[in-house]
Image (cartoon, rainbow, N blue to C red; front, top):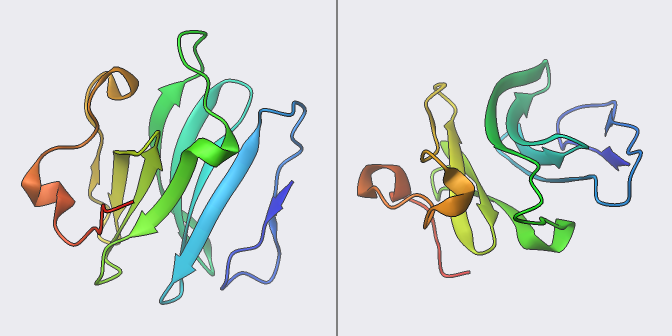
Length: 126
């Protein structure tokens, strides 16, 4: 499976060994955000044409929840300064262009990100 970032000439490819492994992503203003679930983890990445700038571990795969590609959305703030991973309709992790990162403890067991300072600029009417 390949995700072709808008600013990278080469697609980001990862051999997905299982049907429940996937990559979801979107780009804005020369940056790309993508979420990858492999056989062990779920990560949010922020990249530009030079490669991955920042990554944020969202979860370890667990039998208590099952995330499918349809359950994940990658979104940006109106300003394009932060990207986020929405899983099961809740914002689970955020990365800023300046390197700021946030996710709640026990993120998949929580109500997602609720702190106003992190939610600013996101349109969460999903």
